[in-house]
Length: 392
Image 1 (cartoon, one colour):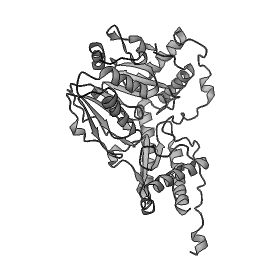
Image 2 (cartoon, helix red, strand yellow):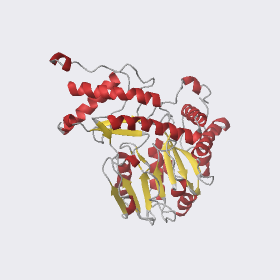
Image 3 (cartoon, helix red, strand yellow):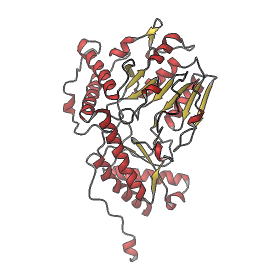
Image 4 (cartoon, helix red, strand yellow):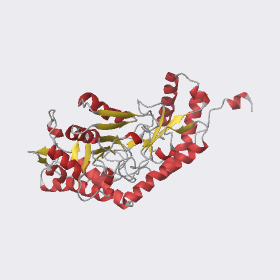
């Protein structure tokens, strides 16, 4: 090959994803979505009126049914997305027991900081791991409360199962499941609080969180009064009893009825897509497509070190080629950003750069609303963008 041929830029793939939305939050809308799906939204109405309240209760009921949540659990709609739901749980429930926090990516690190630096619990123990790994799960103490993320949204690492949680545990288990719910099977019998947001696996609009409580969590709420002041939006009890209205559609703050209609549209689509079985299968198919590509790649690998922990939603990739690893750290970060920016410029993938605190790389959302055909169409573009940036 002559020098001019060797210097020729790589040829762009012919096929393109039909939907280039691969952001890890807010995430892709369900297939076939259009604004016409929201035509029935009860706009201009009080969320406390009978019909709007019924729509809120419908979100709760359909969510519980799809997820297979135990009948004796409560599920409520709360403010401030998954973050608000997690914070409500931490501030309302922690204190009576020592607490273990699993910290292995950005958001779980945030929960650890809240417990240690904001709540200042003296008996808090942070079990840490770097990006790509899980902490030593064998260190979890069943006599302690536990706070953990089922899936690390910014690291692409998930717990493979709930075997590390004792069935006869004494403490409560608070699980941030925002990038796991509706795409992974949650072990409800091992959990006491589960949180997520509308903007992840079902592609809903942001600002609303979901808070699920087991009977054990309700008992803690009704028997424990935190020693710190509780803002109104965190209060889950009234006169020492659970505020049951929250779990029947009586939200603490004013919800967007447009977002409520959108959430219902996503839930109805999920039912038609085969319920939880169908949603899990769609997400796992997306991971399988990326796994096949990674196996043949000479420059990319999963950030997750153990294949059993690789996420099927926030699929995080690191760059492993000698060319990239020889770059200085700042140059590595810049090269990874250029790859993501090039894909966005071409209109084939939006918002797939690694999270700001994560190692340089790419993060592809593979949740249930993403079509596997779009994942497959994207993968050759990753090779093209990498080769283009490398050769620049």
